[in-house]
Image (tube, rainbow, N blue to C red):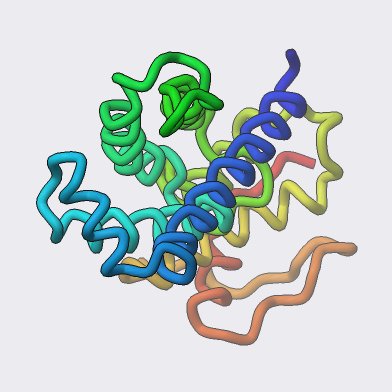
Length: 205
């Protein structure tokens, strides 16, 4: 499996897992209703208040997975919910079509969450979790093969990474304005981005 396939696989798993969590959370609200969910949780030995915690966790956590927000952290945080479901269904046999549902489905979902923790964000992540936007852009600039992206894309990655860092931390005095190379983009107008442009890493011609 190459890098592109791994990123696509992580995205598909993340999207499926997140959709499942959101749908199960909304099921508790609109179909079973919250009082009904509280009653079910109490009937299987959990405190009634945990029904509200699990419902909110499933909806918020599932949405975060669909959007790609801190995927590894969110997947790990949702794992106890799946292990709790596994515990509830453990005595019903293995096949999920058994009366009251067997444990194969929650066990599979728990394994899927572990896989997501290992794989990470995948494609189309809104807020990647491995060090944030600046880290990921710099990782792309450093490790991407020369034939993976044109020079202007790599130059843009340099600038965006520096712009994010410049807006978050105080900028040091950059070099004075000088003539820019022919064919490079115009200097940005905003202060953070302009400072980042002046301080961006320069590529050898």
